[in-house]
Amino acid sequence: MEESKALEGITYNSQRSEMIIPEYGRTVQGMVEHCKQLEDKEERSKCAKAIISVMRTLVPGDQEMRDYDEKLWGHLHVLAGFELDIDAPFPVPPKPIEDAGPEKLLYPHKPMQQNFYGRIVEDLIAKCIEYPEGEEKAALTLLIANLLKRQYLTWNRESVEDPLIRAQLREMSGGKLDAPAEVELTSTSAILQSKRKTSDAMKRKGKGGSRSGGNRGGGSRSGQGGSRGRGKNRRR
Image (cartoon, rainbow, N blue to C red; front, top):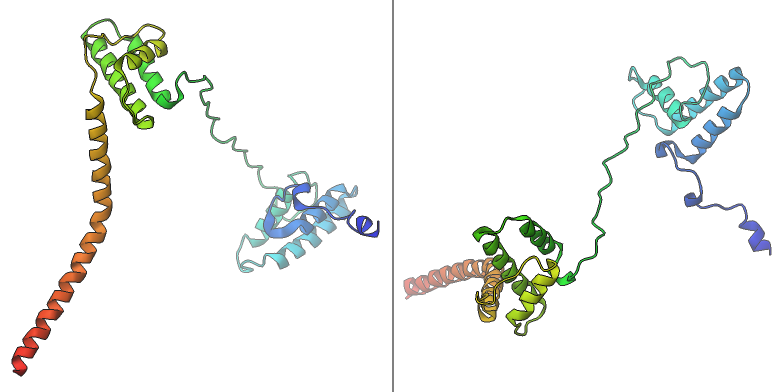
């Protein structure tokens, strides 16, 4: 019971109001709030001068600056939320215009039909549907079908049948796109082979730096070895 009573007056900073200027601390901000509540203007002005002296001690700054005192009085009005009516040696600074920040980004909330294909593929399908009938639309439809097959093999290393890809293309396009059965898609082996080549090239690129570093070290060793050999020949 005694411990709970002792903790009753303790508050966390997360439960307190946000500090407007953290450099002055929460104590100065509390003093400003007390000054705002004083009814007599003369008393408020005296209290404000006392707060300024405390602020000058906490944040010394450059005392020789011309606008040093003016900045302190400006900070006092900022701490008071520009609601402090006092007799000050400097005019109240203009209240800054609050920046609303950038507009909120609108993320698409429409559920995807096939998550592993991604939303970009769905956007391509939607764009292809808008194309007029012709060779360009047929070529783009075939390109999307091959892209679906490549994406499918990214997550499923086993062979995939072309009829499945064509069926999923029809499903995702609402029956508006179809890759003709007589047109062959890129073979599974060719897709997997191209993926291996890309992966191997990336691995070689990553190891290239370490190998070149090793060659430089070997060259210096061979040079040292040659110099030792020549030195032995001279001694003989």
